[in-house]
Image 1 (spheres, rainbow, N blue to C red):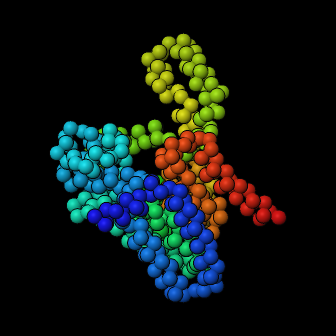
Image 2 (tube, rainbow, N blue to C red):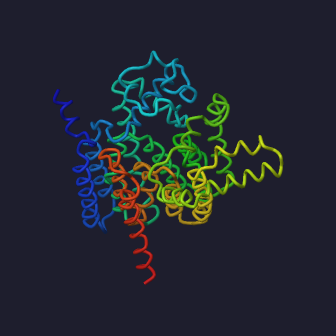
Image 3 (cartoon, rainbow, N blue to C red):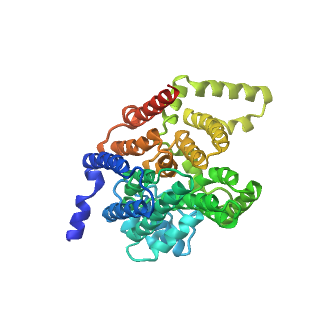
Amino acid sequence: MAHVGLLILFNLDDHLAGTLLLVAAGFLGILLAERQLRGQSGYSVLWLVLTVAVVLRGLLLPLPPSLSGDVERYVWDGRVLSGGFNPYELAPDAPELAPLRDSLWEDLEHRQLTTVYPPLAETLFAMSASLPASVYTLKTILVLLDLGTCALLWFLARKWSLPPERILWYAWNPLVTVEIAGMGHVDGLGVALVVLATTLLALSPEKLGRASFAAAGAVLAKLVPVLAVPVWGRQSDRPGWFLVVTLALSFLGLLPVWISTGGVPPGLIEYGVSWEFNGPIFEPLWRVLDRLDLQSAVEAGLDRLKETTGKHDFWNHLYPFNYPQLWAKAVLSLGLLAALIWSWRTTDTARSLGRVFGSILIFSATVYPWYALWFLPWAALHRRPAWLALSGLLFFSYVPQIWDVPLFPWVQALIWLPFVAVILVGVRWSTR
């Protein structure tokens, strides 16, 4: 009973104001600790960082997943896979899965959608689902992987002659500890493999095998790292071979999913087309396009094409795709492509990876707080103030779901305007 009371006491969605204050205090503590450790080197820094990182994660590990229910969906997917069913074909509401339903199923969000997670993530879910206290077992595994990430960042800092105390901005970051230890997001697995692949290439750029497996594993944990493969290719001694091997391994891992669903999994299509939350460019852009009545102009153009070509059935297929949100996503895709090309050309690996994952975030229609986990290791190593600040500001995106406050425009302004302001101040300072 005392354990249950403790969990209720630390239910973060019931104490959001206190959580935000603790987050602010956490960032202040990192700033002060970094100043104290400045100039120190050696394993003493690593052990101090890891010791505090373990304590922070241990304190948050018992938290119930109150800010996000993703970890419960992970365990459900694992249960489905362990039961011999295909989570890419069967949504939680599927009648075939009725024997698996219990209180976990009742708490699931988006029960009408099939899974969006790649095979390596699903394998981890299945392993956790077969163990006692599945949710907390899975969170414990992710915490151990995340501690490995912290250690690898220390080795990278030494290898690249960067101040090792900078890894505090990842290892002690409140967003990292809350989203991995507290909420149990599988992004911790993907980030660990991204950092592992980078470390292996930094230590031995001529040895492609282990790094290729780590990079492919990152793609099979969460698809986003596929856009970082060109960066790793540039880091290796044989870029062409690295690209071929990594993409081949990723393809082989994804092939069973493609075969079983007859193409791209329907849940992933639904996510790409319909999911929208807190996109910094997306939200204002689609509203501008809607105000300009682009939809009517495109519809009129389609009407003229039908009359001109006489192929009414062909052009009729395009009408359902004519709406401002989809046009905005098309524009953002072009912007992301340009940003990625710019990022891939950067010779500094940490900067290049930071720009890749940062660009994905900026040009995305959906930005949840845990998406910051992907750029944080590289923002920490190069101590990018705007991006480190964003990892704290993103906590405000929980406000609408808990306090019934609209996300657009004021909450979004609270998140993104300070981020832009810090970038502009930094540019002006460096110019001066």
